[in-house]
Every structure is written in structure tokens, then in C-alpha cells.
Amino acid sequence: MFVLLTGCLLLSELLPAQDVMALYESIPNSKPLPDREERAVTDNNLRISKVSVPTLTMYTPGEPGEKRTAIIICPGGGYTRLSFGHEGSDVAKVFNEWGITAFVLKYRLPDDSIMIDKSIGPLQDAQRAIQMVRENAVKWNIDPGKIGIMGFSAGGHLAATSSTHFDKAVIDNPHNISLRPDFSILIYPVISLTDSLAHMGSRVNLIGKDPSPEMIRNYSNEWQVTPQTPPAFMVHAGDDKTVNPENSIHYYEALLKNHVLAELHLYQKGGHGFGLNNKTTNDQWIERLKNWLQENGQL
Image (cartoon, rainbow, N blue to C red; front, top):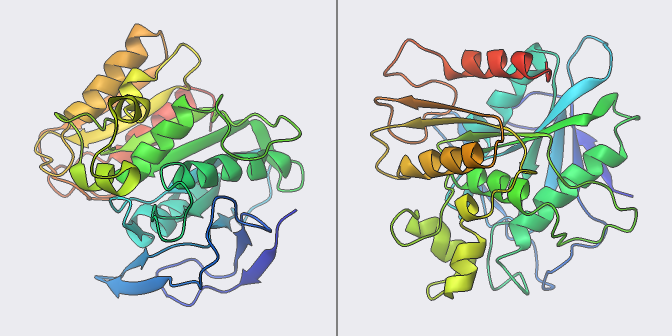
């Protein structure tokens, strides 16, 4: 069961009259502290920090249709904030135009002061989001075999972790609901937490300043790919100075070695955090994504 918090979101860049759902009745792996969440709008982009109460916001296409594809979106922000506007609600609006039901995940940001084990907090919320969407597929007119996960930057790390750790449940799953995404969409993602490739801010926030070699390997998703890892669509810019584009390259190579379908678009320029629009090129990666979804029977 979940608590339904229905209402209009207050900020203009978010779609109105969407359903905001609490992920849990009782939040696992949490310490009893007051909610300290902070919100700010910069350049018309909602940023949320200090998240301790996770939610899932559902954006439903206006026109009725057959059972739909669903995509769970994990905004980025270095595991210290969520870029909820241009890496969340803006993307959901495009998916709605395609007839896809979109969910934006406001996941907990790892913090020792609010979590017993901060390294699993975000993954718990991503797994619970997948579980919730599958459990309610009939109610929400969703095809339970077409549920994907998408992430930007550190949200891409969470999406990739969900795609490689789905057989290691970190939430209660009494009905053995599949926690495996059917596909993943990774946009300038953090993939690796190794010394040579990691975005160090994300690494420190998630697994601390002095992680063990085992912890680093466990959360370096290029090392966790198997033939059961879901297909992936990936986008990165070659001049990204924040998250080394080799993160995407190494994950792509691991997918190929394991005979998993994958597509990587590596642009010459664009830097980091460009959201839907890489202004350095006339090519629109979101249109390439639409083609990929169609070719793979997800749209």
C-alpha cells in the first residue's frame, strides 16, 4: 500500500494535476529525524536537496490508449541534490506526448544523519519505484513488461545500479515482484566509482571518503554487467569535464561483451548537464531515443 498525495504542483515548470505518491508507509533504513527538504528554482529549474521522504510523481498521457510503456526518471545532482525540472518533469512531458506514462523519482539523497546505511538508500527507492509500478500496472494501464528506468548524471548511476543489481533486493519484496527494468536510458551517466573514472563528489556522497575496494567494485556498474542486464540507450558529450565520457564507453563495451543490446551517442561537444537540449548540435538526442524505443518495441 502507499499514501496518495494528489494535488497540483506549485511551480509553473512542472505539469499540473499530477499524482504524487509516497514510496513507503514506513521508510526503511531511516533515522527518525524531521523532514529538512529544501527547494529552490534557478533558471526555471526546480532543484531539491536534503531529500529524506521519497516520492514518485506520475505523469499520465492525456489521451486514452492500450497498455502503455512506463519510464521511471531519476534526476541528477551528484547525490547531493535533484535537478527535478530539466532532468525530470521536462522529460516526463515529452514522454507523455509520445504516449508513455512517466514517473519522476524523488529519491533519498545519501546522508549518514538520516540513514542507517546511506550506500543503499537511493537504490532502495529505485527498486521500490519499479516494484510499485509493476504492482499497479493494471490499475495504471501499464504493460508490466515495458517498464524502463532513466537517469541523468548521478541519477544515471542510480539507473545503471538498478539495471545491474536487480537480483539483490535491498527492499522487502514478499511477492517476488521483478525488480529488473526492461530497459535503461542513461544520459551523461556516472557509471564507475573507480579512482580513474569516478565523479568523486558522487562517490563520496554515496559510499564515503574511504571506501573499501569491494565497495568501489560493487558500485562500479561496468563490472556488474551480465547477459541479464537490460538493454541501454546512452548519451554523453566528449568534452564532459564533470563526468568522464569513458563512463558511458566502458558500460557500452561491457554490454556488448555480454551480448546486451545497446546504443551509444557520443557527441563532440555539449559538456555536462544539458538536459533535453545539447545546444552545440542540431541533432536532438531525444529523437534518437524515440527511434531506439520504436526499434526495440517499447513505443
